[in-house]
Image 1 (cartoon, rainbow, N blue to C red):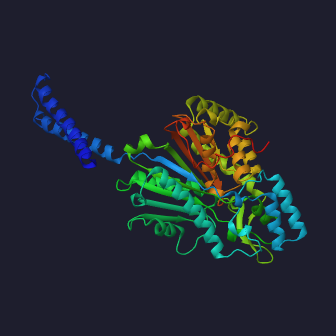
Image 2: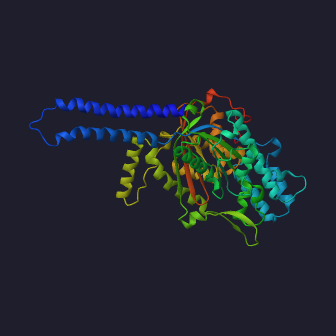
Image 3: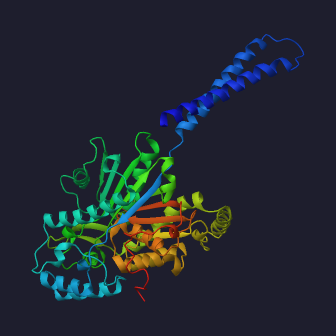
Length: 474
């Protein structure tokens, strides 16, 4: 079928070029000339050359046009109720470990209560053992297998796509990189083809979910031989608990929770009717050249040799500064003309005032109906809301996701997307902005266009199904 379609396209282009040449031959004798010219004999050959040139240009443009990228479907991992990491479970685990000083316990208690997390987030398996036992490699592998297999099983079941149809596999897990890799774990479990293109991303932080989609999309756009890409976005807590008394490293114990998302992408126009979203634009920026941004969230050892991730006081500043630089690039590509003119005028006034007047922030709600902000923490959500001048309604999904699932790292933006769908807020043609940022310091954006209304579908595996009817954080 594809071969027939390509032959038909080539015949169309060739016919157009021939029509141009024939028209030129028919019209040339009718053009009056004042006197014969020795160059007139070359005119037919020039017409032939022009016709062939037009055919080549059109043909090249036709085949160089990037393929569309569709989000066929996605699934988010939701552990059983026995894995809920309530305040009581967290406090019991900390005390049973006997690894923290009373001052550190009090500090974590205060952070937890102010974090914006609720009592229905999920913890890794090793936290729920009757007798405290320090996490080992086996614990981390168990956590990874549970999240990845659950999300991928659900995704393949509801899309009815056979594992051997997958051409590209991208797996991202920031802080756990075993040997063999997590992509090899998936290849082995689902018996993917020997020629599958597998990629593992590690150490990319909370922005890696958006970055992994960008990577898979670029592969799908540029290759005509691959059609399905499976993207698995997860994080691992088991081996990344910090057992020490450095306060900047204790914060991660309080906010990070278990989560995983599996996403299926496709580049075939025939899949468009069955797909949920089309990827309109992606953008990634890296701000690691700034030393303070680079070290804003940094894995290192404390004074006693305990490894942890230090969240410095520069983190919020780095997020705000990096976000401003990011939207300077994104804004001209997505904002309507009215907003661009308004922003240009305010920027001109700011320049003339030598910085005394700050330029107005564009209204991104004019180009996006829904915004999924990475909910790294309560303070991060508030800072992003201030930078982008977003209303409480616009940041609601981020706050709700943080409360219900905690900071699941790079997969959290898909839990937010699931929130919109569970609320039946997405209509056909709506634009969704996924915005994530993470260590390094990196910022990533994905712009999706909805291909169908969320009212048209019932998602049995939506992680919000059991709680979307009630307010969680009042």
